[in-house]
Amino acid sequence: MTKPSILSFETYDSWDTEPMEELFEVHQMPVNGKVGELSEEVRAKIKAFAFKGHSALDSSIMDAFPNLGLVANYGVGYDTIDVDHAKSRGIQVTNTPDVLTNDVADLAVGMLLSLTRDIVGASNWVRTGQWASSGAYPLQRTISGASVGIAGLGRIGEAVASRLQAFETDIHYYARSDKNKPGWTYHDNLVSLAERVSILMVCVSGGPATAKLISSDVLSALGPDGVVVNSARGTTIDEEALITALQTGQLRGAALDVYNNEPNIDPRWLKMNNVLLQPHQSSGTVETRQRMGALQRENLLAFFAGKPLITPVG
Image (tube, rainbow, N blue to C red):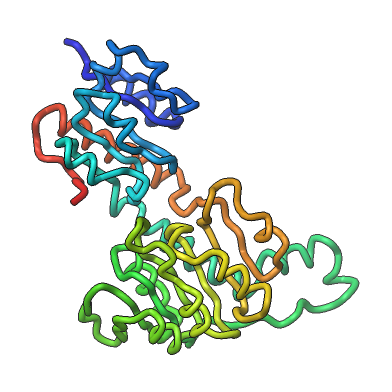
């Protein structure tokens, strides 16, 4: 029996490539992104994409495949995919929600702890012999009992807030509507939320609707004792405003797993000692990546079997 043909983007681990190749005839997107390097015959055979990565999947790529019917995204965020164009052509789109929620929330809280207690700096204090030569490490800050703002109370935002409840924090949140969370305070305006908290956890989805949602006004409202943790998308924060606020003391600190222009991030980030930097690795555990790949394949199998998709977008 002939296997259905798919186009795979970027590289996968062996636990994904092996079952993918058993199930499908896998063609590889050229590393340079030039679809013209694939023959017309191959492009006509492709009916689904196993999409992975943060590069744009726009109309020009989709339109090079006349029989494309599905973009199965590896990841929960799909802001790099032109979903509107896909819909206009009848191309379905799926993502991999839920399976990565816990890891993203875990790292967001871990980054907050690491930033406020300067765990990296304290480790270096011991490693470099400064503990013995210079004495105790400078005092840091506590998060227990703090007021925390959650920007975006979707799956991940709610998971972050739930974890922070263990620290007896006062939870405030911003969302499109009141989620009716007893004990948590709803705000329909990010500035009003920022005025009430000292910690801002950014958990909104990416895309044009949330571009620079965390604006200079929001950062100013957070104040000089405030910290920002971003595990969402780099585009959700006005990056220039954030850099300026951190450089001038308008903010106390930031912990970032996402940036503009990844992985070639603004070099100014590397020069600031009040910023914790991570390499966009919120979902970067073996267990979660295996679940993401399995869900992506389940969507592909459902599509080729003519069954309802497992996790459709929109």
